[in-house]
Length: 258
Image (cartoon, rainbow, N blue to C red; front, side, top):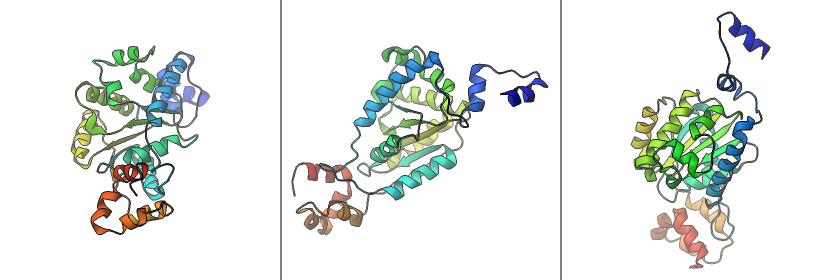
């Protein structure tokens, strides 16, 4: 703090809370300022509920090894801060992002809201609907955590007011210099052009696209090898592409069709 004061004294610079947090964020993990603590607790609870609704297993309790895909996403947001995860339905985009968000100690706050929760005419209306004393942009600017996570899951579902609110959040993160924030946007392959447009509208220039393929048949066989009957289906060429879709595979396993 003394060094910051010394560096700015000669030029007549000043620090208010927002400017000071922007300089310290990303280097120090600070306790939330009291005025914002209750709001973050509410948002953490809402985001936690949305996160809990994302399935991360197949069938009853089968975990598919996606370490390589997860490492790619981590590398991308480490180098660019904002990553667009593109893949067809059933490739496991939401599940992978949820797995990243659930890692203990990785992120101070997670902001994961649905299109319905963001489909309001203004940020003030969003704040009122969640019982917040401050708007989401104000909370983003004032976050004192060294690393927070903003998730826009299934971009193709965001339209109208919800999309406008998303652009406002992205613009706020961009204007803060991306200090202390990582952003992941997921969507269909066809949503990449839409993602580029909204990022450019928000003033974001440094972002990357991460393509997520359907898991391989060999990876699926390894994960479900103890499930009776499924191996026979996976050896049928006409069913392999269908069963590589994780939504379909999960449904087959949960309904005991094998």
